[in-house]
Every structure is written in structure tokens, then in C-alpha cells.
Length: 520
Ligand code: XMP
Image (cartoon, rainbow, N blue to C red; front, side):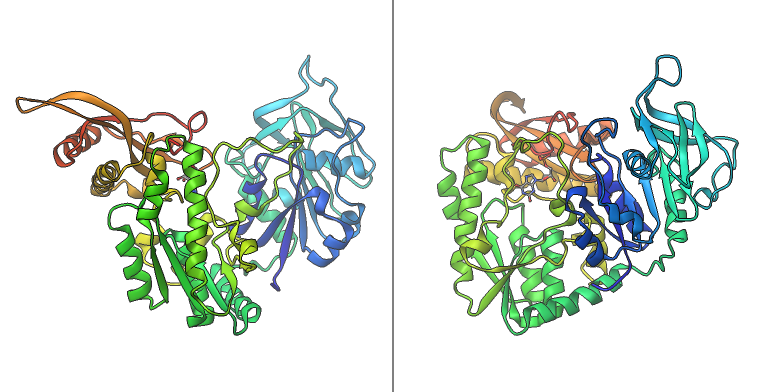
């Protein structure tokens, strides 16, 4: 796509994605690439209008450390180095970095720090309206000698070179993290960097939609495309976007595994087939899924079984459509960023995520992933541009394996029925109290435990359930939602009165980590 781009070179910081979020908020397009993939050739083709070096866990004081290609410094574009990014730039350009003590026996700075100005700098416009500026630091090393052509513009107690710049070349280095929330004026600094880099800031979701529709049309020509529809926001946006671009060359396949929420299958069919007129195959395979899940209690085995059958069913239906060469998927940017791992080995699999990843190879299809440059909230904006109903756009995420992973122990039709009713009441309560949009995800889990209760004059022996509701920004970390006691009491009463089969309600107050959002 032909628009101004900013390149973020990733050195493995935990918060690199936040840099990208901040920049996109200013209507500037940017991409994150790990340092070892940024070669001279890459740089030439990418043609960034400015570059940011992220922070990272490495140390330039060691024998080997990650660095950008030398050609970044002759690309004639502004560079901002953040934390490790500052240190590697200074080291590369003739300065020095050390981990020696500065104040007493302290060398590092973690958390809140105060910055004092040395002299004015365009990068710091709007800063120091008070005599000191609060920033968030997280460093062990620090710059001790400036590179050629650099001056210092602000200092802190443990970072004498907290803000440095070579103003002739527009190279800037900051020891703190302007991208995090805890640097209150950090956004302004990034705004200043984009301004001095000369971005016209015309990247918007509207422009994105127009560009992507043109690209899809060119890529697909007169071939046919299939798209797996789940009813969630990502696959819905992909389907509507593709339908806009290529009309009836698109067929959606909705695999109904019988593990959906109340009315979900009907809602999806109604919206896409009847409302949008998008050709849709309803692969009603609940019996097949339930049969295969019989007797399985291990969470990973459940996930793998569902994933395997999903691919088989999808393939069966896809073969009914002629001339298919492409498979469209709702992959998002956080899924494609290759995070830099300094630990070496592959990370531990906590849960096998369910997707249709195995399909393209098996069916020799080419992949179309129109959302792979976007973050989740940007996908929601695209959804709005395309006129998708707000109700769908704001819908809580729902996992691919569906209610099966909210049913610890064996999945049975009876438990699923109880779960559907309970889930619908919980969500209804949340809507009634105006809390839906404050919560990232809310659902009920049915436990493989029966407890004794008393209703009227009779003894009951029914299932216990758990309510789970969390706040989160991206699903990576989460905290439980602090419902009022009144809300919990009212919801518990409704659940026990209205759902036959449940006689005890509990609330899960585990954050993530150490818990995960789903129970399996
Ligand atoms: P966990 O349970 O890992 O969930 O904290 C994080 C987010 O991911 C969703 N989730 C899934 N989504 N396929 C999906 O598409 C899956 O297999 C899957 N497992 C978990 C979960 O609902 C939460 O939003």
C-alpha cells in the first residue's frame, strides 16, 4: 500500500506494541519488525519516513548485543531510540554505555522518575510546564558518553543523559518509555516526533478500507474465495469487506459445532444470509462434534478434537464450491508480529488455540488476511466504516472451541443446555445494569460438581456454576470485574430460579496471570 510509513525496529521490549498503538492513534501508519529481519534491502523497500528503536532486555555492554543495520543511520530519516534503543544508537554512533554505579550503590532506575530540562528541544515541546516532568524508567544500563554530534537536553537522578539528540540529523534518544501510560506527557513527545518527521497523518480506517478493497480485487481477479464465519467481529468484518470487494465470488462457511451460545447460530445466519445477502453455507455438525467429544475430559484433548473436526467439516463443505483458490481469515496484527525472544527456545503452550491454520496447505488454498495490519480496536473501526451493527462490533470475544471449554469434565448436551440458559441470563443482567461495554468478556462455567441445596421444602442436588467477568485491554492480562454485591445477589437469585439444574452460584475473582480467562 502506498502511504507514509513509520518503521519500529523491535529489540524485544514488553511494550513495543504500545509504541505502535500510540502512533496509529495519531493517524500515522507503522509496522513493527524484529531487528534481525531489518536488513539493508528491507529498509530500502520499506522506505520509512521515520524510524523508532524499541527498548529491550539486552545490554550493549556485553560482547554480543542486537543492533540495527548500519544503513539506518544514513537513510536520512529521523530516528527515535527508546531505552535500549537509545543505548544502541549512542554506542553505534561513537558514545558509551555503562552499568556502573551513579548514585550510592544504585545504578538502575525502575518506575517513576523525574526529569529536569537542560535546554529546549522540539521533541520536548509542551514539556516542562512544571519545573520537572514525570516519566517511567526501566533500565539497568545508561549512557555515559554521548555520540558524535549529540547533546543532552534533560537529565534524571540516575540517567544523566535521559534525553539526547543530534539535532542536525534528527536523531533522538530517550532513556525512559514515552509509550507507556505512566509517562503522563509521553503522547505529546510522540506527537512531536511525528510532527518533526513531517508525517501528513492521513492514515484512517476509511483510507484503509478503500485501499484494501482495491488490493483484494486485484489479488483475487475472477477466482472464488471461502471464508470461515464464526459470528465474532473479526471474521464478520473480513466477510463484509470481501463481499464489498468481490460480491458473490465469496462464500462463507459457518461451522456450527453445537457449542455456541443461545440463539447464536440463528443470529449469524440471519445477519449474513438474510440481511447482507452473502452466500452462506450452514455446516450444522453439532452431532458429529458431540459424538467425538464423548468421554473426553482433558482440556487439551477437547481442544485438539474440536480443531481437527472443524478442519474436516470445513473442508467437506469447501469442496462443494467450485473454483475456490483463496481462503480468507481474520488474522490480526498481534498474531503476526514476530516477537523477539531472547530466551532462545519456543514458549510453553498454555492452550492449543483453535483456528483453521492447517487448511490452506491441506487444500492448497492461498490465504487472504485483510486485517493482518490491524489491532482489535482498529478492526472495530473498520466494522463501523462498513456499517456493521454496533451490537456485533462490541460483542465480547468468544473462543473457537466454544462452550466446550466452559464445561470442565465431559461435555454433554444436558450440561450445554444449562450453560446456554445461564449464560444468557448473566449477559442479560450485565446489559440491564449498563455494564456490558465496561467488561472485556463475561460468561458462565458449569462445574463438574453437584452440591446439596434446599428449594422450598425440598432437597436439591444440582450443578454448581461459576460466573467469570474480566476487564482487559487485549486478553493477555486481565482482572476480575468488581460487581456490586447487589448485582451478584440479584444475578444469583435469577440463575437459581430460572435455570433448572443449577443450585449454587460462585464468582471467580482470579486475575490473569496467574489464571487464564477461560477455565480450560
Ligand atoms: P485465555 O483463556 O487464554 O484467553 O486467557 C484469552 C482470550 O482468548 C480467547 N480464547 C480463544 N479464542 N480460540 C479463540 O479464537 C481459542 O481456542 C481460544 N481460547 C481462548 C478467550 O476467550 C479470551 O478472550
